[in-house]
Length: 468
Picture 1: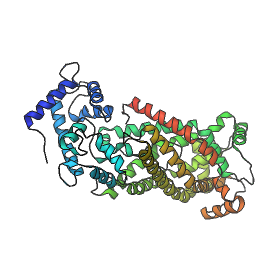
Picture 2: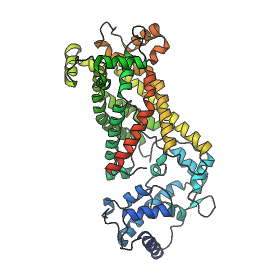
Picture 3: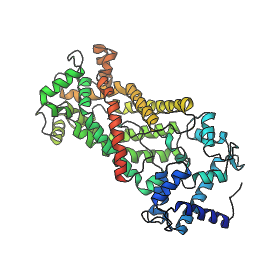
Picture 4: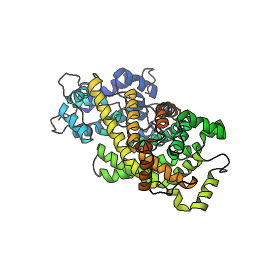
């Protein structure tokens, strides 16, 4: 295995690279010069690499840039990490990475890629046309790019979870070690929370209509979309369309934070000595994290349903609602519907993740001819469709959960268990009764996804988080 040229030649090469990047010839390479240099030299994510290359953790002033000595030290550390990663991918230790080794590396992460896709990845680094990657090609391709481990190599394959459709049941987002060390993870969580808040506020009327249709039987209330919106406006004015939205927004931050922390702990327990998780292991860790978060914040879910359904003047506010529930129904009322809610996480997260991976791989196999990166629009489309499929699978459980949360507050409503409610709905309304309210739920998906993504990207820019 070649270790590269000698120390003197290596430093000479780094000096030439420094001179090429230092466009204004002031003896320092700043973020802007590094970004422009990466754009010329090709590939990767220049913004991300530029920020990480000139990070304070690297011993440099991010505004002042790097001088030649700091730049040389940075590249030396990068080469050492890249060499270790090259060895880990070079499974037969012959000094070259071939197509089969790329496929095996993806397979280790639970991702199946075709021979053609592996060839595209290899071709992006192969400069001499041998269809293998030696150490020099690997080093030169990734030296200035933000590559730390296999999770970074496969960064674009992650399931995008910034798509907030008002149902916090998805697999939590994953952050690289660099993002955790630099504190970028909390900025992304903040950006996601703000995006979710704006998205849910924008689609709150449809969400309130969905809850009304879920709770009120079709036998007693022939509620349709336009009629339902008209009734809500007549009863409480236009502002009543946003009832329950305050607590729906308020619970985003604690749920996201709890889910992220729990996910990290479950990943660590499941992963052991592995570098990263397979798809099925991510599903298990994500489902457990979702269940943990839901267990802790579930009383807020009950309050959200009660406030959404309230009549004008019924409650003075959030605290008054909580006090009345406690006084009339006891503390157990805050966990009505908990079982179907937790059970709904499994089909939602499982189908969401499976459909997402399937759609993405199918698109890459059929339409991606010169890149292994599907692009953000494809990922958004895959995420929207997979989330919708997950909703269809888990919707009957979500409907039963909402009815259990609300039935004590509805005069004359039977107080039934989860199985009792399923039997009651099927006997009175048939299978369509399990999907009441799904139409406005579907109507809000595309605007919710669009709003949350646009706000998320703008918030990341405002907070100084580079987009991928």
